[in-house]
Length: 284
Image (cartoon, rainbow, N blue to C red):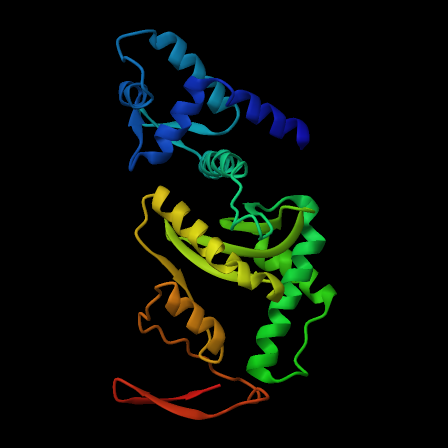
């Protein structure tokens, strides 16, 4: 299997074949030879024999098929095109973050320097510890002091919730000893919506403004991507975090998350009633 994958990637190493696959993936219908050649950035009146050879190589790898005088991607070809699109997007994002990784942000000579950088594999244990602290702090406020997350549960949550496609994780590094003191993660959904999912800074570093640094970094990256807004969902019980978000300029957009409990009500359960547009709902 690895040999087949290597041969497929090798076939796409030629820029003409790569352009042909991307052009067919972007097309709304099969393309005739001259149309595909032009869509691939080539002159239809130039070396048609060479282009025909490249299409033949793609057909041998099962990525392209000819149907009634027009070319289309096979099911396998569409999957390859999707992988290429993801790799291209991730590579561009990585180049952007590596550039940003060199930027140090300080808060005066008396305060420890900090920098924000992308998550690296070596951060796994520290990120799990930060995630555990985040959950335990939030749960203690929302559900009482007995609601706790273990470090092992946090490790699993890092893998299932943070290290997933289309989700970016940035960490705050304390400059003196490279200690991780906070993180933020956001997902890019629906083709470009920046949705903040997790954010946490250890309590002793909040006074240095690290929370604001993280949100400002996400806002900066959203602007550079051409977006005009960022989103976040928060529980009504997270009062301290809501106050912080209000100071950061976040406004409500009247989203209501509903749940149907199929077995029993959670513990604790407030049952507090609110009214929205004439309908009454119970809060957890």
